[in-house]
Structure formats: C-alpha cells, structure tokens
Length: 104
Image (cartoon, rainbow, N blue to C red; front, side, top):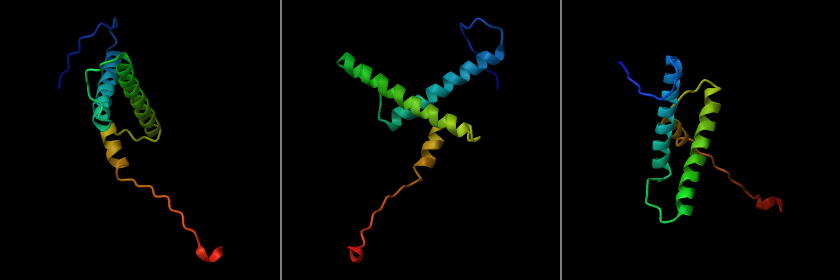
C-alpha cells in the first residue's frame, strides 16, 4: 500500500511526517468514538456558552481517553479506544453492604 501525504511541515524527515499523520489519525478516531459514546454530535448551538461547553466536554473526554491509553501502553496494551470500551463494558463492579441483625 502506498500513502501520499500533503503537508505544510517544512522537513524532509519522513518519519516525523508519518508520526504526525498517525497522531492526527488517532485523535480523529478517538473523537469519532467519543462522539458516539457521549452522544456528542455536531449541532447548531444557539449561544457561545453552549458551543464552549460542547468543545470543553469533547476535549475533557479526549484527555481522559489519552490518559487511559497512555497508562495501558505503559503495560504494553496498545488497543484502540473502541476495543478498550468493549472490554470495559464487560467489567462489572458491585458494592454490597449487609447488616447483621443478630449483632445489634
């Protein structure tokens, strides 16, 4: 497979351009998944506050995704966000408290 990338980056270093391209591709993929997960779709906001809230929520969500993925990569887990969400959806946590009526 051959890729042709057009860029305004002033360098002949192919690995740098490829790294930047993959970073952008990764960000776009994460945002696509997040927008689906959070039901955060492009809408026409009627106020600047609503637009800013939309952007901030998206950036906060991406920051969380990036933090989780970074921590997983430190343990050599390099899954895409969609796969991480699928695995997380299989995990359940239950907190239960019981009061012993005989001990009162």
